[in-house]
Amino acid sequence: MASVNVYNIEKEKVSEIELNEDIFLVPVKKHVLHQVVTSQLLQKRAGTASTKSRSRVKYSGRKLYRQKGTGRARAGAASSPTRRGGGVAFGPTPHKYLRKVSKKLKKLALRMALSDKLRNEQLIVIDDLTLPEIKTQNFVRVMENFEVRKALIVTENKNENLEKSSRNVPWVKVMRHEGLNVYDVLNHEHLFLDQSALPRIEEALTS
Image (cartoon, rainbow, N blue to C red; front, side, top):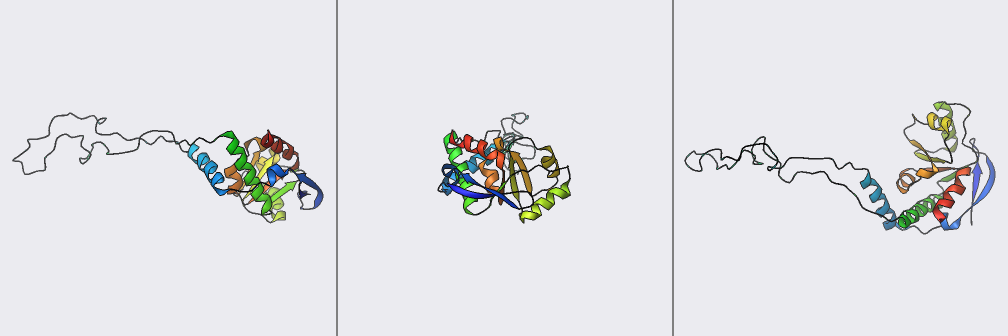
């Protein structure tokens, strides 16, 4: 079992906690992480870019002028991609950017991401992330206590004071344990876990 310190918001050690080694001590395989992160990013693409090909442009199919004797290049129709207002050659069409990944592989990748944070000492467990009031200044002061930048904070339940206090801090993201994912864990330098959210995370990743 892996043992980590538990801190309060003043960065004072209050206790220690044992982490499940099947989740936080997993060998990291970069190709697995890459596969899952790529799948996540592709799902964010809208895939709505669209252009009209020459068959969809509203023009008459009549030949513009006779083939020979005009001194101009031969032309068959106004919808040609080489003419102004004509169709687009090989343009984008709406489609889905999907790369399916199994649930089993997603869970494995998330275990690897959490293990990587623990191994690099970038995982911080907080006993209670409740703030007394909604105030950005107080939240920033807490982050300064830990001397971190670009942090992901994971809570068990809705924490209105924390969520609203951090809303205007661009380098911090707050989410509940249900939304924990590989991309956000890897995209942020430090990971803060609410102690009460740990059992929920371990339960989700062992089932």
